[in-house]
Image (cartoon, rainbow, N blue to C red):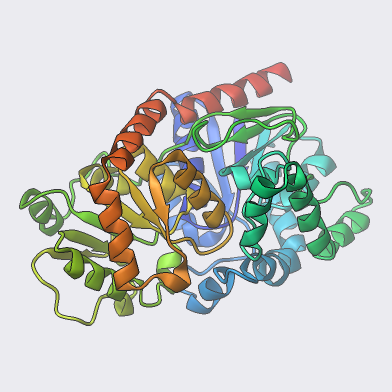
Length: 425
């Protein structure tokens, strides 16, 4: 089969697709990643066909990153100022990817690939969709944390059933956002259809929930054809390369360190996170690794002791297993790796799915949460100290890791896609 995958976002969004593409290629299929051009240099060396889809993203555009990660307006501006104005370009590019090579047999889209459902409807191609985190379902039975209105997530515990109003509220707030998509559908002779932000993004044929049952269970208002697969892990070439010698030397020189990271995108809008983290480590007297990315300003200005190692990047799958605890931003990819490693966490969420992910891991008993505006050395150190001194966090994290180890998200998802395609032949 020729299978076209499409999404937008960060490496946290793209890595699961790489995992699926590599497995499908191993099974003899021809996967295509139809995603923004900035990912080309990472995809093509893997032997996976690549198709560029607009709008283009720039991983080094700090203004864009800071705009999107704003907790109040980040989601709205990301959609209304970046994705939706370019919906015609997205449609043209994705249609070309689906039509190339004699035509695709299957289209698989993430929720930010808003042109995907339109391409599927216009061409009639079999279409599956996927989500990476429970937030994407906006369930009234398991109300999500909406970043601009976090207080709403606390209401259901006080007033039973009122949580079902949260998704309705989200629909009211966003009711005008999707007009560019409706306009494109009119131009193509299609009816207005369902709400693109909440409903139309889900395929009526198959919805893959690429996360673990420990993060969220099926709810009555989820799409009926949803399959929870488990996480689809991909961590670059971590299985083929060793850690940088300096980092390996540091890890073997003492007890497990704390690991501080902001993932692949929020790291571009770190603020003073690493400065405060270094100070917190000194207050604790612990060893630590700061994964600061490629932004020079992320490196703490203070003189650091030999208990702190600063590195641009390291595969999470290799470093998290050797950590005492992990401090991160709550992106679902980072969260998944931390859960897999079985280590307790302190989560400092930015926006999008991160506040909701943070709430879920806190309820699992594996994490504490600190708000970004409250992340100062003294408060961070206090929460980290509690994580390390209360053995129940580590015990619960180990229990969750054992559950995740029994899941195979990649194989489960690929099996479902093959079944779907074979049912059409």
